[in-house]
Image (tube, rainbow, N blue to C red; front, side, top):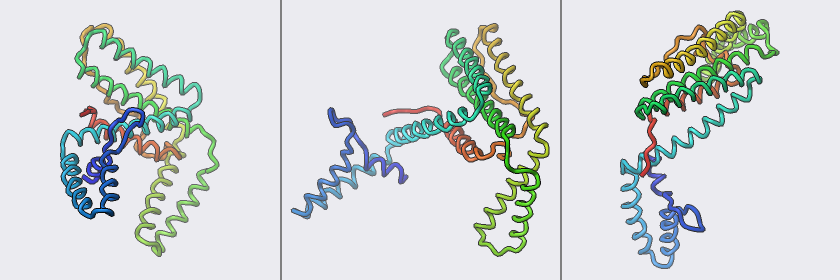
Length: 273
């Protein structure tokens, strides 16, 4: 609710030649200045703000506008992070991702040419975006697995032993202990990933090929059947992308994007006042 109250107080309008002006905040400032000459203006300003701000903040229509603006900001930030992940990849991997995106767009073009219902196109667009996101995660994971690393199984084992020793002594604060425990879990996952690196790479390549074929099949079905159908993005991966250890230093970025995309799924429609 605080977010809506803050937005209501700083609500702005477009003024020709001046741009967007926070009229409510300026009005409150004006009453504050006038109050030094006549204290009654303070009471008047307070009464107006007490009526205007809550009425806006509690308005479902205004809340939808605030939510939509917040979603647009998160989408813009998410796209920047996503593009940063794409730039990490070598040229061949980027080309594979672009080829997949091109085929996904072709699928949507076919459905539009068939005059499919908007909800079908929107649903299929989201499903195809989900497949593209999984595809990008697979490419990022492969990138990190193939990148030279200064750490070996021996150096990781040494770090694990040091953390386990610290935790056994139990001299840290509870928050530090939790942090070290989480770090220890990640290090052990990295050990496991390093031991089965080649197997993981083969699983990732298998998953990439599977998604390629799935999108090809979706495109063929859309072209041949002639009747718009809802696409399923469910796919069971051979590789384990749940353990963030395969993403290296990009684990945090991947996690943030996952959370952003999850919020977008729960609020797909952007409404305006």
